[in-house]
Image (cartoon, rainbow, N blue to C red; front, top):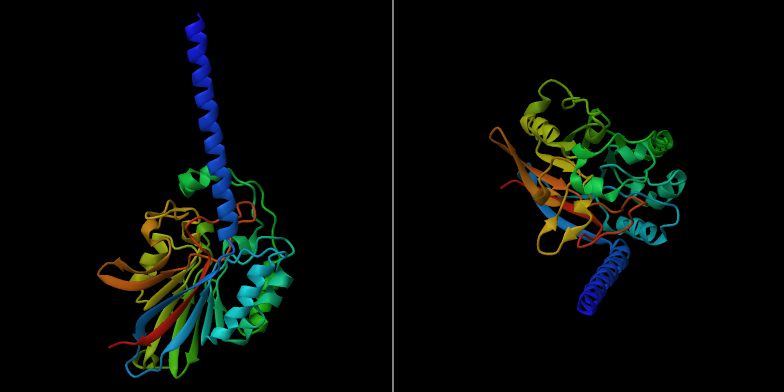
Length: 314
């Protein structure tokens, strides 16, 4: 009996030790993730889609800011991006993460609102985030239970603030803009994650406008494959999207575990080519700038903005 008790005691001690080590590792990972969420980075890419002879353009791609009024480090970094002097700012949604975030966010973005811009919304522009079981995120969107009734954010004020600065609202809309002598045709959709996308085709111009040099840019929040296929088939020259947070919690050397949509996880962040029906379109998916305020960590996935240099085709 004494031997059995000794063995049981040893097993209990091993279990306690392993549990303690697991808790310590979890606490260390959480502490690291809390630190990494504020390690803001700028990813630079070059995309050759402009007409031959055109002057290169700099496009600043912002997404998933998820702003909370107390985020002073994030606010300083966002404001500093104006020093890049972009020719165009593209905002692919999920700007908010708090009921009182609209006014301080617009104040933070004021230096960037001086530049031409376009935007589409994400679900966290319309609704405040809710507490959810993190395991549901890891299982993917199709496995989630219906969300509880959500609190509506002041998205009208946000859109009005962007619009007052001259940024084009591409929510199920299309519009053209001239940048450095090149006509950009934009087409955007409302958030596919909420299944609100409605396709507006490309802007219609004067007779013969399609024969003149132009660039077609699709702007979306959540890069679901059905939407990427649509814009690829529609002749987009570039697709810009966000939503994935780059996976947010990644494994070093492996990458994202989830994309929070049906996009393959290896495409959860960065510049790749989306191929469909023989068409290949550059696709830039932003790794995002923020997190939900109920899961404020990032692991092996630093927050980012992307600066795309659009260069002439060769």
